[in-house]
Figure 1: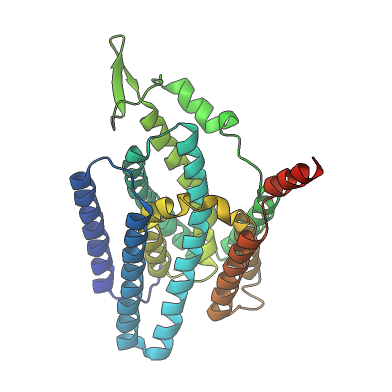
Figure 2: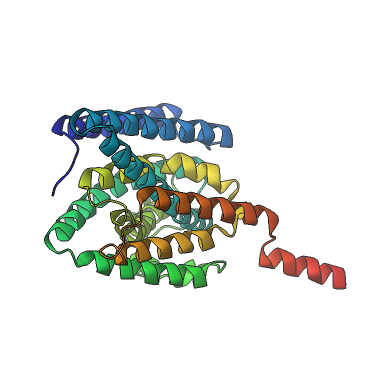
Length: 326
């Protein structure tokens, strides 16, 4: 697996991620269980975004030293595009997390810990998947076409499913988890297990963490192939993915407060997946420039967010129409 990043930058990246997680856990432990407000979520989101851009600047400098500014510009653009794609697709992930927390009535004070554990699991899982994906592409070029077709189909399915409320009760993963582990009907603080009638059983919080983990597995299958359409360099794929994930917890609490306002965002994400899938399938005929890909992603997100603020949801429009007819 060829990569343009020097060894010292790999080591710096690993150290930076471990340090960031350590600081996050220390802060989490000191704060204890508490509800994260919009201001706190916004501040942490800005911190994670700033760290991501700072790392991209260091990456640009490292590449420029060995390969020149032209190559550094291209590679840093690939990181930025990959980061934005992963961040965008994480929005859909966040909406599912919100559904899970709402369904199980998870107290806001406990949600922070669940997301923190989920982030660590996501980093480990995606690292393994990215390394395997990089090896497959290096050994079997045709895998890119498989990834492209998968993203194309996923984008189309996401478009048709957009606007529909997911039915968590009929979710097969939830049914399986309930079948294999007895679960209490009540939370016991932030504990994952409790004792009822002399028996040690799981709390709903453990079930929530299991569902969050399974959800991330599903979304990783979508998002990781998407970034391979931008670059096949494992360093860029991994770092852009991980930095997008590190800010996921703060972004969740930020978007949870305004989730209803961006009801058309799923359509935009579907368009992005179709575009990326098409780009990947055309890679041997015409390589769409990274700058164009970045422009498409930003434009689609901007348009769908603007439309979300100016077009009422179908349910709201139907309610207003009914009210007027009365």
